[in-house]
Length: 138
Image 1 (cartoon, rainbow, N blue to C red):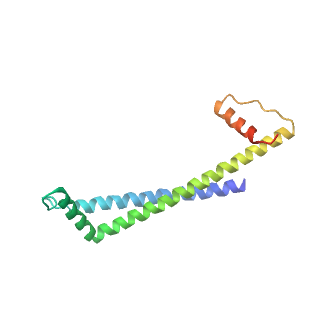
Image 2: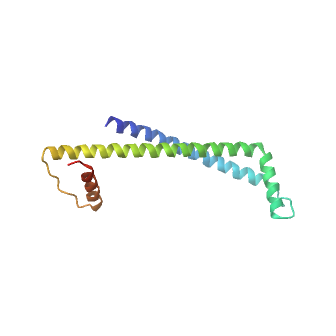
Image 3: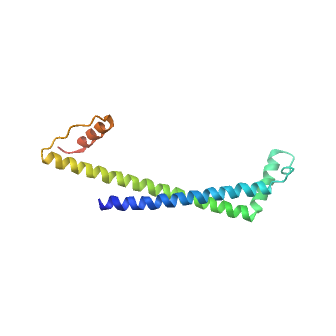
């Protein structure tokens, strides 16, 4: 039980960090869009065709320190979110494994004491109960 409480506490902290990081990423994206809009010439990017205009825009973006800083901030937040999401998934899997271990132990105690439990009407629960029963050695 202590392990489940520890996992819950860590998940709570990770969810908070995840929300804060998503906000940082959102703000960085807003900054990127604002800067790109500010850099765009009123008459459009110079060039005879779409590829030349795209190259002119990319060159202007690459030379703008403020835009590059916003891009770094966005990318850092993206990487952090990827790591946070992976940690959350791992902890949730660990939590579920612990919960199923507790359920299996409860079934063992009930069977040892000769207590029968009426199956629930919930089809999902019935399938889960059968899966647990199939895993038990007796």
